[in-house]
Length: 403
Image 1 (cartoon, one colour):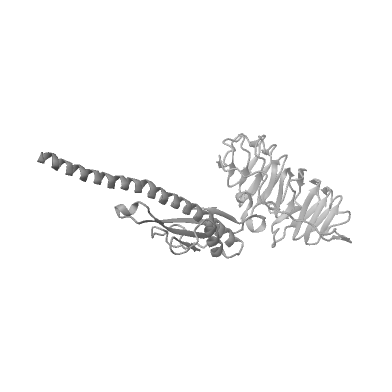
Image 2 (image 1 turned 90 degrees about the horizontal axis):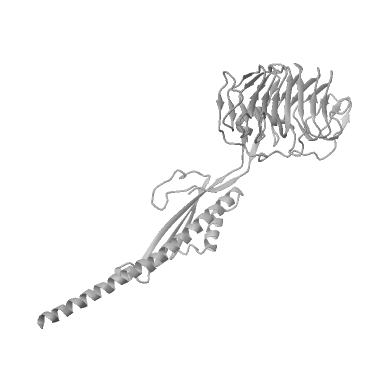
């Protein structure tokens, strides 16, 4: 009988231990779930606060106040008791006390949220609260300019199809300072027939094959494709009509063929043309610091005309010489001679560009960008690309969550 009494006492102890164990499991399930939910909410809040702060920074606003306000709207009000919110620019050490690749970099904004969650069942096992620390880092990348088309001298933008860059006959083409870029994802986007000669640092192709491969020319395949239509195209406009004075034309809108009859000199500025750009016979045209916007019409330069044009050397359209908007797919056909030269970018994203004839070895200080590009006949010329002489694309400010 005494043995049975001792067994009853042991059962009571086992029951108590089981109850404590059950409470511990309950604490893990309930309090742990609450802590996990709080951490997830804090992380979401830190992410959105970092992005808001980065946007405010790009716009020149109070990035710290914006980050704190966004965290508050998501339930983390920096009250110093249940949560604290810290917004840093540049980032400092993170939740784990260690730095990161972004520490000290002023382009990045950091948000850290510390939370304290009171437990319900945790005190039974000695845990009265759970602390969490979460961190988010966003990049506030300012607007910047970058060379168009990766700094290549000759660019065919058509995103698919064969012969988007086509050489036929026996042209002799040399590029200096930049190579050739073919944006077509179709094999044989670069095509050559006849006996062409191309001297260039490199041909870069989105596709995986050319037709045929030119001897002595390095080719890079499977390159990233340029978005088409291209992003961030320029938008030069004219506010008044062009005025002719003798043989000189002032900047402005020109309705009809360009240049008007008798004009041999273009004053510096922007010309918006609603008509064809013709240069024939022994025509002469000189213009320094000019931008020619072909809103409609084509360009045909033929014969022995003397042409000397250069783009602006400063301002928002620096380096932009001739521009065909996406709305104008008309052709550019240049049958050059040694008397034709220009400095600046020819940008015609929807237009075919055909280059024929001959040119002086120092004639084309340019970047030639068209929907398609064709060299034919007996073209003989050098395209010299220098970023300082050509147009750079404006890349707008960007924000992105990086951590």
